[in-house]
Length: 250
Ligand code: NAD
Image 1 (cartoon, protein in one colour):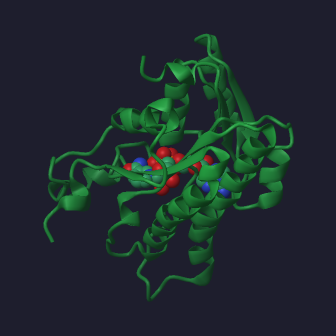
Image 2 (cartoon, protein in one colour):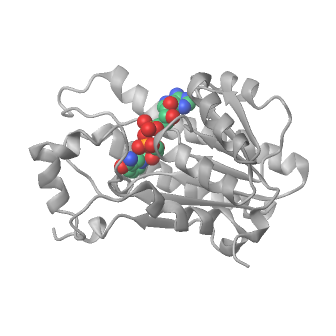
């Protein structure tokens, strides 16, 4: 049966306090994965993990700032070796390139690109030390493949995540660690719902070939494929889930 191997596995999901990260944690737990939810603030994580435990799942919480390698090392010092990493923590950041200040550039690149590397490296070291492989799923964006106005830092960071995925998959294949990247298009979550009700948001939706936003649950299939043995021969790959947005007409 597809995805049956997930039962009993241990997964770390970063940025799991809301949005897509919380969806990924919920999803994996329903397949019997023991999930560890990580984010900078633990309060939101506690509520989510209690909900998962009340359903009979296993859920743990760790506080972690992915931009700080000491914080990542401290968070992972408990010695758990994870089988699955969903490298999801990320921030957006918009502004015209001519006006963008250095601090904003650093904030976006440190979180989305450096943070992704630091967590992947720490988790992969744990997998290697424990003598088992695993699956790392980086969460980038269609902006890792194409560009849009006023998003230079974000698009650059996500393109970096796509390239980082390929580089890590090449080095870590011999350790039995697969590394892939999931690139969502525009998915409706709490942080963008309001924007997509605005005129600019409605215009953007018209440029998506399917003429609608995605729903978080429409990422489930791709996430399960990459995380589980169903994707055992997939590494270094990028899967786009975007209603056709990347193939929209130039
Ligand atoms: P969100 O803001 O709801 O979630 C982001 C999560 O990352 C939050 O839990 C936040 O606390 C966490 N985070 C931010 N900085 C952190 C740090 N320094 N250390 C630890 N955690 C940190 O946004 P979302 O829409 O759920 O996005 C999740 C991921 O998906 C992001 O990487 C985002 O770029 C990507 N993505 C989202 C969409 C979309 O349409 N929602 C589209 C493409 C890609």
